[in-house]
Length: 474
Image (cartoon, rainbow, N blue to C red; front, side, top):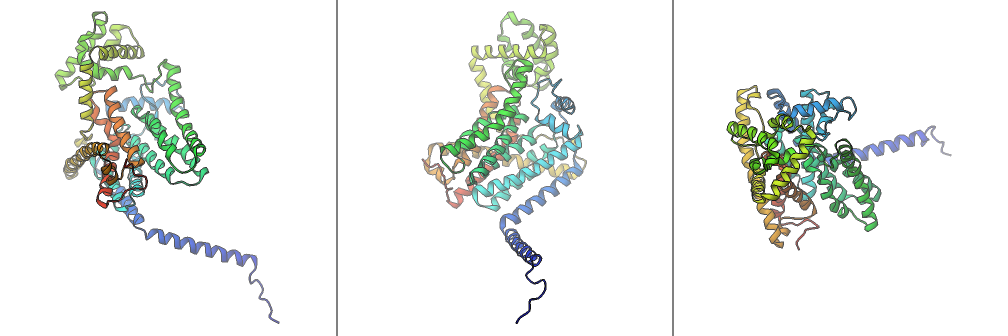
């Protein structure tokens, strides 16, 4: 008779054996994943992004602009965890970020650097998942890190970097939603996407329509019948209703205007201020006061852009209108001028649309502590701007080509992910010039890398002559 060995196959031994097997299996999977090209390229991109930002931190500094003061003022309100005293001149996203970092400028820059690093990684993932190429994914992510117009904006205490983050995250979530096959996971991801897609508009009102633009693509994402798709769309809708709808309700209840901010009238004057002379004598106080400040601004800077901000106190005094009342009155007068002089308005619309694509770089050379670093950045800025303008021109050309040619749509890999990205760019290029004028090149900054992504993605499909599964060839 064979005697059993005490403790052999006891529950404790079985548990240890099972744990060892699980760990070995997990280790094998991790080693297999680390051997994949996307892991190596992703790690390389992550390291480059960290080292580059560490270098920039050592030679540069956070940059404030006139708008920064307004954001800081509103951040002080939000830091008290209240909207009491919030004046409605800005949406609350960026003030909330400033409040979260304690209104400290260097910490705000560090937060924006962190967001920028994540953007580069999201661009890598987005390009890799929609082309299957880890190399092209790393290229697009690295371009974000290397093009100074994007990287240096992380030091600017303005809304663009945060807006870039939320836009790219939303596009990545939409791609992820299209890959999900589990209904419950799809509903959860659609809910998260709705929250994420609502965020860009809370940093830049220009992107409020993004949530509406995403609706048909949420419907098309994933599998299932119309009931499953309807549930996903309903889950997606919760974010816009709570975030954007809640904010619009606050503005309406506080200022009796259904708009993301109270600045609509002042933005329209950027258009109509050039021909304010055509206003009738009944509004002479407001007309003549603005013309005085406009002419001073033109004499000093050559353009009337942003003259309105200098004129507001005098216009309020001349008319007796409050800041909010003046905005509403300027909106009324501007719409009147647009109706009476559509040719002048659409001339500015065209000029603003052309200006949208100019890819300027916002930075302060004097803030660079090293002469060598300043020279390096200056050279990179020239190269980066050439690349950005070339990408913009290519995007416009390829957009026209895909409209007229089904064969081109096939070769360029135009599927719903290309359409959602390109459509967002085109929609923004039109909306921005309809409602504002003068600072139009800045409006492309949050979308410049999306332009580059669309162009690089199209180039990959063209070179490899390989169409995505759902190519729009008809």
